[in-house]
Length: 233
Image (cartoon, rainbow, N blue to C red):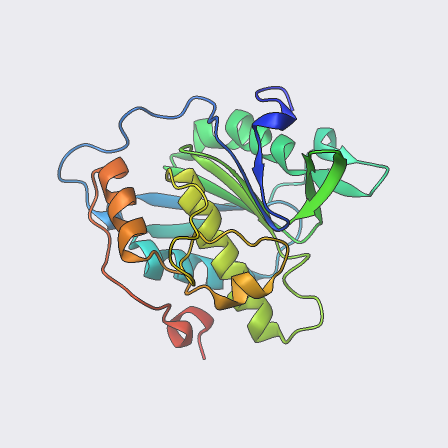
C-alpha cells in the first residue's frame, strides 16, 4: 500500500478501515443539500449478480436516504492480485477506485462490490481476509460477498452483504468502529460474522448525528432496515 503503512490500519477480522483518507474532501456538501442529492455509485469489480447490487442499492437508500445506482462492470485490476493466496488486496482496490473510477464518475461516493476474496495486512499477518475496507472520511469503499455466503441461505447472505456495505460506507463518511452500543452499524466485528448478523444495518442515533455533522446533510431517522423492501420479497 503506497499511501499509509500497515501500522496505520485499525482492523477487525472482517471489517477494516484506515484512518488516513487520500484526498478526503474538507467540506462534503453545501448548505441545503438533501440526502437524496448524495449520489452513491456501486462499482462491480468482476461479475456480480444483479440481485446483489439491487439489494445493496436499496439498503444504502434505506439506511442513509442517498440515491444509489450501479456503474458498468469493470475487471478486477491486475495490480491488486495477490497470487500466493489467490486474493485481491483491498487497499489496492481502493486506490484503483480513486485513480480510475471516482474522477469521471460524477459520484459522491463509490462502493466497489466483488465476489472475490479480499485481504489486507494485519499486524504480523501479511494477508488477512476481510469482508470490506474503506478509507476513513473519503469517497471510496469496497466489499466482498466471498465471506458473507458461507454455509447460510441466500437471504442471510444478502442481508450480511447489505450490512457490510452500510458499515463500510459509514467509515467513508467519517465513522470509526464504535462498540459503545451493541447492535449498532459501526460495531467492530471482532473476529466473528455473528457481529454482522446482530447489527441493524442502519445508523444508530449517535452514528447518524455524527454523519450529519460531517456531511451537513440530514439523514432519515430510521431504526431498522426495511428488509422486505431491500430484498424485494
